[in-house]
Length: 516
Image (cartoon, rainbow, N blue to C red):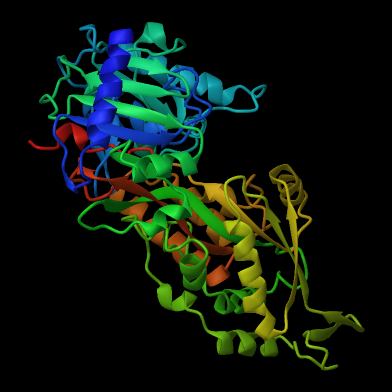
């Protein structure tokens, strides 16, 4: 261990002493990530966001997602579906082994998936794991022989199941032990919690040996320390979602590569609170909020446009930006059509409702962000944008738990909240009547019917068609406002990938093939 530590130290010092140049990676890379909770390496139950990108270098899945966002074979060489998506059969590649030479079998796939399903279905657990949405997809999984995996679907017999099969595969005997073996391009050589993780090339990998033979991962307890380490050349590459990363622009000395996340920022509108149940009122609020201004001024451009729950970076996205353009005059017109005016000239809209006068006051709840105050700044900008309409907004800041209580009880007018969307594109949890994430109390038989249809679309083209119809319905109904998806940045002095789509949880994707 002492010799290994001295090698790591020498490597770090040698890299730090070199002038920073944006150049192609050679045989090693030093990566910095934020990590405070990972005390054991457990790929089936990851505790932190960026560590998943590291796991992706050691562990592989049945299916991967390509640069176009489409599912492709990985450990499975092919698959077939029967019974209108009720049964999916996967054939594993031949001659794939774990890093110790043990052959990969269908039993390993079944055991890995079953472990995740058991965790996800355990109602006594407060945390059901990163892959918990598998419980909605898979009814049963079995091995018919060493190379054949058979999956029976539950209530979602659709194309989206392929995205959910990107979970890591480990040996059946190691599903619940730290640092299990993997089939990926690298193996874990050493790990010290809160300090470092060292990967070396897997000599038994079933594909061509990577050019980069060592990846040293330095673990930092704060984003500030991480960015400082990058500034002083102590790491070659840093993964961060901090808005402070916006100061770095690609140039001679460094590359700043944006990546897409699954975190959707929203302004929720409670349809059961007057007057937000009115479609024209929701459309007026939509027209009055300049999301691009918020993205640029508060999030420093570290966002991805999204006017529906589908990111504009997705192949499924339906571009109807004209419907969402900032238009203050349209907002005023819609409010006037609904009978709102400032009759007493006090600077706040009013309207006679049930023989009594109602003033246009809205409560906007926002919860504290432990990393920065961008969401609170966003709330203030929204209040400022609605003020010219003579809509008075009262902002209340609360804890995450308090916000959850308010949303669950429906005790709010507007709320700024983010959602971590699943790898499988499906926003039914927030748009179908009665579902757990439908905090806005939005009710649409058309929307529910579309999602029921989506969840039977086992063919790619049908799935895409229905997804676009869902987005049109969202645009027409304005259940809530999608502000944008958060983006992150890969800061690097060494180019290590040529993939077009760098995305959260796969930030090292492509390093295994670089230089071929």
